[in-house]
Every structure is written in structure tokens, then in C-alpha cells.
Amino acid sequence: MRLRTPLSVPRLLTNQPIHKPAAGWLRSSTAMATSNSTFASAFATDPISPPLTDYKPRYIDIGINLADPIFRGRYHGKPRHPDDIQGVIKRAKEVRCTKLIVTGSSFKSSRDALKLAEQFPGIIFTTAGIHPCSSAIFTPSHHRHHDESQSEDEAEHTPACGPDPTKPILDSEGIDHGRSEKIIADLAALISSARSSPTPSLTAFGEFGLDYDRLHYCSKEVQLHSFSAQLALAASLTPQLPLFLHSRAAHADFVRLLKEAFGPRLERLEKGGVVHSFTGTADEMRELMDLGLYIGINGCSFKTAENCAVVKEIELSRLMLETDGPWCEVRPSHDGWRYLVDAAKAASAAATATAAAATAGVPEVGGEPTTAAMTAPQPKKQGGKKNQKKEPEVPDRFKVVKKEKWEEGAMVKGRNEPCTIERIATIVAGIKGVSVEEVCEAAWANTIEVFGL
Image (cartoon, rainbow, N blue to C red; front, side, top):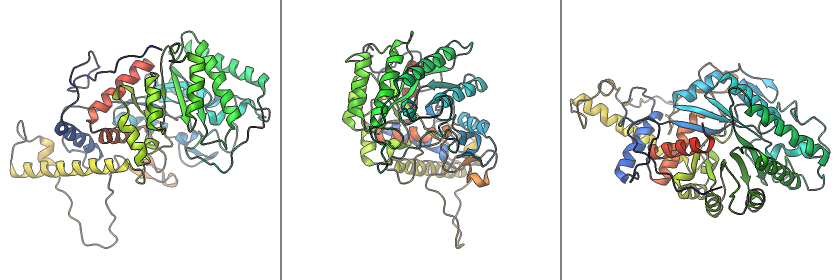
């Protein structure tokens, strides 16, 4: 794959498509702070707080597991609430996340993703591949057909993020090579069929790779075979597809197999690829960028101060944004959460100042106060009631309820959604000390270039 020069982000005055790069796109720290405050106002509970600039963010969620039955109201095989996939899509659109790449991590989830794309053309795009944690289908002991769910009880949930080092599967089971040939042939047929559709939505090969944090799903031996076999298929496709890659605690083997398939500089990788949900080291990230790969960032990328230090070093020209829902939400325990708190405080202060200026009849900078500014409510005074519910540090844009108390239009607690991608952009901007506009526009341009959306 040819390494391209770093992308220059266009002047961010409108929400129009990118036409040509503009020089000097890095702004002053003052402008960046103003922009971050602007975006943070999206988290404020007051829906009529005025924007401070004309910029409207736009997002592509490059990794969302919408094929997971959780988004149909089913948890571990049991229905808990109505199918609310329409509401999930609606909330994504409301934050201007207008394109979603739904991850295929097995035969079933890849097919289900393609069906979703038919239901939401132009919004949902898909990948097709076998996740390292779904690679037990290559073993002799796997008794179900590889096109079926591995467990009726689990109802084909995507693997949760957390590692379990106490129960690794050892490298003793071996590979069923006859079955492996059939699996790869069937995956090739699935990809060919999807690409020949009148309205093709398949945009990438994957999710596939290595995950040594979660050897309780599949042994290292089997993961290596699965990744190698799929890389050979990906390299043989004409034309190739971009790669949607997974690497956890397996960097050396991961890079080695990529180079074996596509050359020492990945020069035979025609469409590039992204290593999604990145949680590796700065050195690993730099090696991946040097190979021309992109880095996908979600809530798992902000857990520790070390994680955030890595995010700070990612070049905007190699950045993509994702939620990886229903997992990988940003939590208050994450080091990156503090950037949301800072943004919320800045938004609150800006709203208070605007309301005060409107009440005093003081014109806004650049003209008269807006209608929204003049009607903005004053900050609520804290009453003296005991047991009064504490206001959250970071207000939720949408109402959040437990799945047992589901209601239409509300998010489900603990189920991450594409609409939270604005939080990812805010944290990245805060960590890197750049504007949210720069983060959004760079990620948008990178994603469009690689996946051709």
C-alpha cells in the first residue's frame, strides 16, 4: 500500500463536503477552547442554548455492533423490551452521526448486518469476517455449523470487552483443516454475494485479527490460524476490500502476519485498513501508522492516563472515531471522563454568561443577542431539600433508563449507542488540545477516503 501524505483538514466554516485542503488549519489555543465549549453545549440540558459558531459536527461511527440482539431488545436469549433499532438510528441522526459501519464478527452477524443495511440504505454499511473470539469454528470440537450461533443462550452476542485471564483455552485442540477450507470458501462466497448486490453495502473485510486478552474464547493457536487464513483471502480479492482489524495484547504476531500477507511495508494492501478500538502502546501505534494504517478510537481508548497519552500522539491524518456499542462506553472511572466534565463546565459557564448578557441587554459579540439567547432560562438555584437528586457532572443528551423500565425514545443504561460518538470526539479534542471541528473533519475525511462511503 502506498503511504499517503498527511491529510490537511479544510477550513471549518460550514458543513459542506471537503473539496481541497487548506493550509494552516491548526488554530490558536483560544479558538480551540472556544470550539470545544461550543461542542460541549450539546451536552447541556437546555435545548435552546445558542451555538457560538456555525459549525455543525458530522460523524461516521466506523464500528458499531448493531447486529447484536441487544439492539432488538434481547439479552442472553430473553426478550426484555421491544425492538428499538429505529430509535437507535434516530438518536444517531440527531447528533449528526449519519453513517454507521455495522461490524460483522461471525457468519451470522455478518449476514444480519447486511440485512440491516437493506433496511437502512445509505445509513448502514457493513463488514464481513470472523472475529478472533469467534474463531473456535476452526477447531475439531466445534459441533455446530459455522453459519449458526455458537450458543442459543447467548443468542450471538458480540464478545464483551473485558479480559478473563483466569480461564485461557490452551493450544492443544488443533485445527480442523478440512473445516477451515470450507469456512474460508463460504466466507469468500458471502463476500462475493454481498459485493454483487444491486445496492452494495459491504465496505470492509473484518472484523478479524488477534486478541490475547481473551484467550478464554479461543486459543492463541486457533486465532493465529483464523487470522492468517482470512488475510490470505483478503489479499486474493479483486479488487481488495479495506481491512477492519482487531489487535489486543498481540502486536508482534499481528504485525508479522500482516507483513506476510501484504509485504514488509504493506505495499500490496490496496485499500488500507483501520485497527479499531485501539488500546495499545504509543510505540505500537506509531508502527501501525508508519505502515499506513488508521487508528480507531472509542471509550476503551480512554481508560487510563497511559491510554490518553497514546491518543494524544495519534496524527489527525490517521484518526477514526467509533463507539463499538453496545460495549466500550466512556465511564466516569475512565481517565478521559475529565475532559467531558471540563467541556460541560465550559458549556454551563457560556450559557450563564449568554443569559446574563441577554437579560442586561448587552449585545453579543458581532451583533444583537439571538432569540435563543434572550429566552435562555437562568441557571436553577439549588433548593434546601434533603435527598435532592444531584445534577450529573456530564448531562445526558437523551433520557437513560434501565432495560426493565424501557420507554420509547430513551437510551438503555449500559448499552452504548452511536449517538455517544460526540463524547469520543470531545475527549479526543480535549486530550490533543485541538478543536472538535478538527477532530470531526479529519475523522470524517479519513473514513470517507478509506471506505469510500
